[in-house]
Image (tube, rainbow over the protein chains, first blue to last red):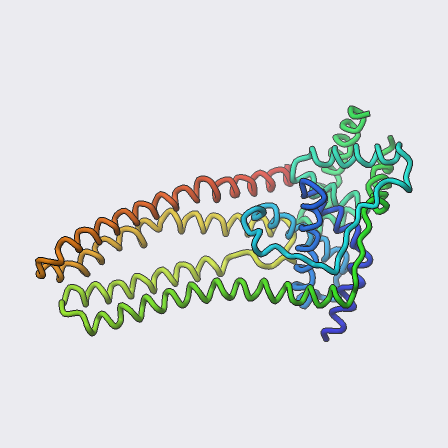
Length: 168
Length: 196
């Protein structure tokens, strides 16, 4: 049973680690904060895994946990530092921008800056949209209708494009 | 910039941060972190329970050994008082949102409900914690008034009780204003932002 749980967890982690980390980054003020949050999300995913029903998508389920943990982390942060989770086996290295051109880096930094300027509600939607999730999956994770998500995404994209154009 | 390019740019951040982990070590650490968290919560609950039980047992003993009827009655009332506090605290714990598998809106609504309950508990604590302390304490000490050399001590104890109750009341008021209300406002705002 434990072995099966470990296999599901590791598979989900390998497939979604970068996505989860990016969601954590949206809700963090800096990269250190994002790393703390990422570790908290992992522990909570592991803790909630026995409740996971295999008839639903593990990826959608993982995002649901990640978003709720981000929300909880944000509201209790700075108060419960004493029970902050530290996973030494995990390293998140900033490998920098060597592999990418300056233009690509600038685009990414501008997009990140603009995402940070959105309100918290829009951040939750855009974090999932930018990970390539379908409207149906986003609506399932957030508890809003697909039509509502479609309208919101359209508005948010416009906001982001305007913001990026202003930065250029 | 075309809209679909946003997704491409966003996902290109894979090449900026690299996550590495040792599988077997990570699994051990996750399990121990989870165990540590559970132990921490159990420890907090245990402290609350032990304090309440000590309080109840102490007053239970006083009921038998106290020389005055008023003190015995006050001790019985104190036991009821502690049991009531325990019930109220356990009641609020039941509605604490713990199911992370809920959808975001549902989780937000449950968080709001929990915060509202906390706020109500702190606001009404003046009636079921602070005010009952005065008559119970008065009844507890009044029997000792018959001993003249203890009178001075009784007055001091009662004054300290009043000061502590006022401090507790102000502390609760501050917690509601500075901690709980802003969190409720934040959750409301987030629900509104998601729905509008």
